[in-house]
Every structure is written in structure tokens, then in C-alpha cells.
Amino acid sequence: IPDFGIPYVVVVVVVVVVVVVVVAVAVVVVAVAVAVVVAVVVVVVVVVVVVVVVVVVVVVVVVVVVGDVGNEIVCNVKSTENFSLLNYIILSRGNTVNSSTFVQNPSAKSSTLKFIATSIMSPSAKIVVYFVRNDGELVADSVTIKVNGAFENEVSVQFSSAQTKPGKPVNVNVKASPFSQVGLLAVDKSVLLLDKGNDFSVSQ
Picture 1 (cartoon, rainbow, N blue to C red):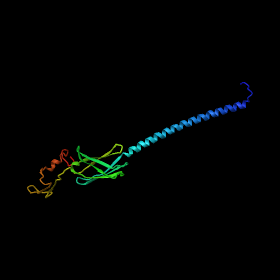
Picture 2: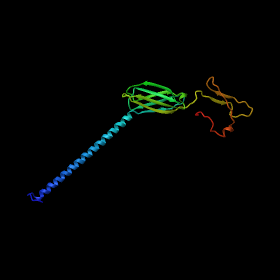
Picture 3: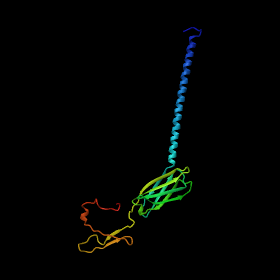
Picture 4: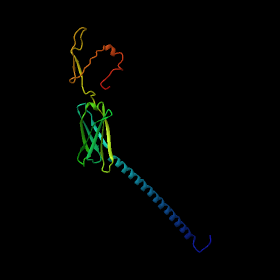
């Protein structure tokens, strides 16, 4: 090492200071890089949260209380966003059986839909509710319900006696709507024990 008149101690101190400065700069660079990565992650999380909130805003929940034919069915429609006009369509057997629009308080986020279940809605019906947001977006939800009572004309049969003997008269009391055409068929009970796969039920 050339002798420039500088003590070796001073040279060592200068080298140490340079090393410390380089390390400090490296630490600062790493810290800045980490901060940038954290900021990017935070931005991504915020964007995801905003998207989720937007999706939640347009959700409509339909809660249905099911009744039989002739009874009232109540639907509680709830949304996380206000709506003033609510539309609904009732579909059954591939046809539109009912539809309507009703107005409510513009600041409301829920509404109650009521209608009478009819035989044309059995055995099941789909209720579609929807409204249009201020930006033109269509918000909709649907639910399928079961409606009991498949027949418009309910028929009942009663016998005058549960048991009788051959040759004895039996009275059959049939109740149905006026001007109904009624057919009666008597089948030996032993025939029904053979196979029940071909029998017709109310649901069929």
C-alpha cells in the first residue's frame, strides 16, 4: 500500500463507514420494495372488497311460506339496495300464470308479495322477482315452491258400510262440483296386491 502520509487507522475507519453506508442504502431499498409490495396487496384487497360489496348490493332473497291450493302464499323479498318498483312473474307448467308490478316506498329495502295459490300452479311454481337499478342494471332472483292440490274439482267418495256380504246393497256417496261426470270402477282387492307399479296417484 502506497504511503500517502495517511494513517492506517483512518483508512480502516473510512472503509467501515463506506460499508455501513452501502448496507444502509441496501436496507432502505429493501424497505421501499417491501412497502411497494404491501401497498399493491392492500390495493388488491380493497378492490376485491369493493367488488364483493357491489355483488352483495344486487342480491335479492325470496323467503316463501307455502300453502295449499286456495290458501295465501306470502313472499318476503329483501334486498341490500333500495328499490321503488318491484316486478314478479309466476311460472308453472311452462306457462306464465300471474305477473304484476307494484310501487312501494323508494327508501325501502324489503317488500311483501302475497297471492292465492291456484290449481294451475300445482304441483310446483317458480316465482321470479326483479327490479331495475338507477344505472339500468336488472336485479333478479327466483325460487321454486311446491303447491299441494293438483285438481280443480276435488272428488270424495264414501261408502255406507265398510264391510258387507255378497248380494247386500251398498250406498256410494260421491261429492264433486256441480255437473261433474263421475265414473266408478270396482277392482278386487287381491288384484292390487300383485303389483302397485301401474297405479295412479294424485301426484301423478
